[in-house]
Image 1 (cartoon, rainbow, N blue to C red):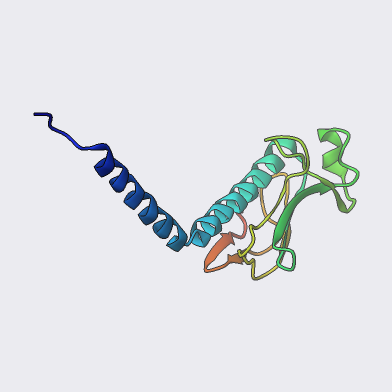
Image 2: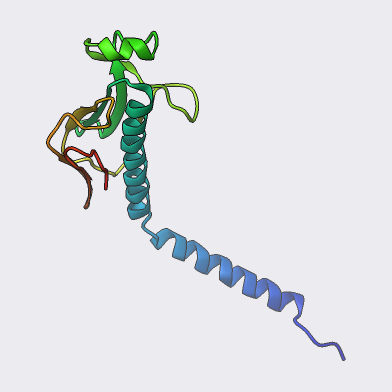
Length: 154
């Protein structure tokens, strides 16, 4: 006498598990995960801007725009030649900071359904200090804060 499951029993269990998984996946709300992921991405961008400003000696502008739910990091327009040019650069922030992870500008847009509530624009000087007396960005129910003087992001 053989012990085990018949083919019909195994197929029945697999079909039931498939139906349950389809129902369970449809009920999972992934927006909180996407919001947290974008929050971490923006925090990392702010920290990178500060570290780049310190190591390169160039002012780095951080611009967060609520209307487009996006952010960008830029250098001064006349500071593209070399680090020495950054010390005397006074132009507008017109040059996108290159993304170290690949080609293109260091910028990002929130996923669909994720909302940035307020604008924030400032720059980090070559000592890593923000040009504002502190500020915050609200992403859905989460807040990112930039400390005055130190530029610490939390």
